[in-house]
Image (tube, rainbow, N blue to C red; front, side, top):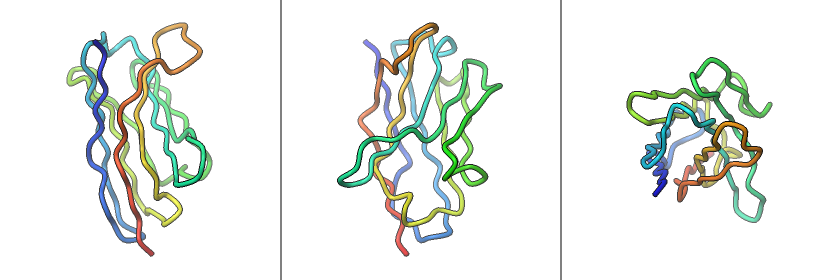
Length: 119
């Protein structure tokens, strides 16, 4: 059974940093494309960043470029999201997700971790 478990969320002041982690189990981790999404209160879940199987290619939504960095450690079945210069508008529940080779949709999702940025 595939499981994704996020950690690292919390409350931080604007301008601060957090590092989110997502540990995967039940998958051949290195074959999966990984992503981070977020959902703010009353809004839809939005894409934040993703990373290919070997970590060589990463993409970001414009609003986080230069502030967030996605990375993965295939040896530890973990994907990270380093978030710097946080803003109140980054407040949301953050989810990690995985999709297999050739899949157009993210198949597996974690339960989410809350990130709150105070002004």
